[in-house]
Amino acid sequence: MTRVLLVLLCVAFFALCAYGMWHGWKRRQRKQADLPAFPSTPAALGAPKLTTTGVYIGTTNAGNWQDRIQVGDIGHRAEATLNLVPEGVAIDRVGASPIFIPAGSVRDARTDRGLAGKVMFSEEGLLVVQWENDGHLFDTGFRGDDKDVYDEWVAALSHNPINTEGKA
Image (cartoon, helix red, strand yellow):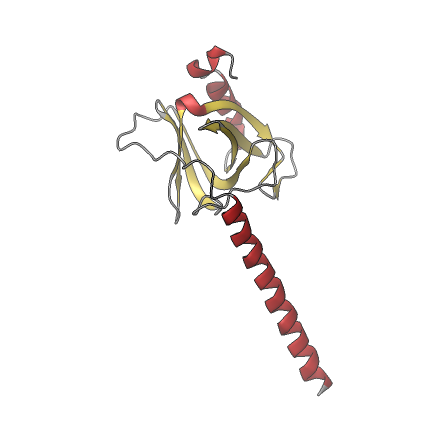
């Protein structure tokens, strides 16, 4: 009898934890409902200047590496291909909607250790693109399969002709 009660107690505790996580996710979605809509991917994109595969980690409010954006499926991690095209940065995610960052919105690029609750062992484990959408700054993180290309990405995005206006 004691064993049955312990099992039921463990199941109830697990259910309570799952409910708490679901409730927190929904609360964050409501809190972020007033964020500007993310840009849609243009119908036609130019030839990629840089391409790499890896995992889309997430998008956060800039400066707050744990404040993951939960609106729609933006908060879902997924295998992805990152493309730098003349129009901006295109993130094609497997099993989730694509994400597009217009070239004029890019403010900075850097490597970092953590974003959206994902922490890497090395200081340069993630490629993070900071961008602006309707006056709101976001950080979007990507963990590439080949981290040796991060320097190329940072250089290409940091020297974006749009950023020469002092917004870098």
